[in-house]
Image (cartoon, rainbow over all chains, first blue to last red; front, top):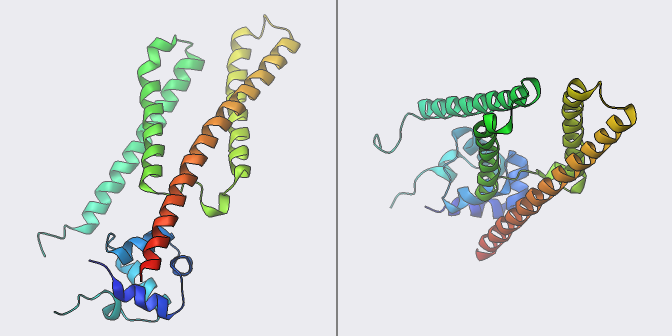
Length: 66
Length: 159
């Protein structure tokens, strides 16, 4: 499942995938895969992404209620 | 949920153990090849299996990493400078190992000039061979990374 909220949060911060990847310390490919829903990040990486984007874990990674 | 998520810790630990075993096995194989080739002086047929296994495994590791999109030449080390440095290091290593082996085998029967010429040729051939191999790897790696970048750019532009 695509992580649209993460993508939106990143764009709101005016960051490119490459910028976020550099802040978090991973490759751009990893960020792309998380946004595409093709990679399941560790809790450590989720927290780092949340901190970089100024969001909470719930806000970015919790399943959306139908 | 219980069916979906395995115990991540044990899975990760098992993978790490597998990876360590693979590394140890590769180390044992290269030691076995070097000892047989340079210390025991046995013919190639005696250690051909180890030779094929070692280089086959190394080739597989490289190709799998490249096709999976793992950047072998990270951004900090891009460019032919890194390839050239690696080639020189590889050529020097081959030169030193072969030089010591040749000296111990034929040291008494050769003149210093012939020995030095052999060393120089070995170094040049080793460096050139390594340079060609590393250049091919660098090219394949760059091409794959470029494809990934293009795909990510397309995805990013979609929104």
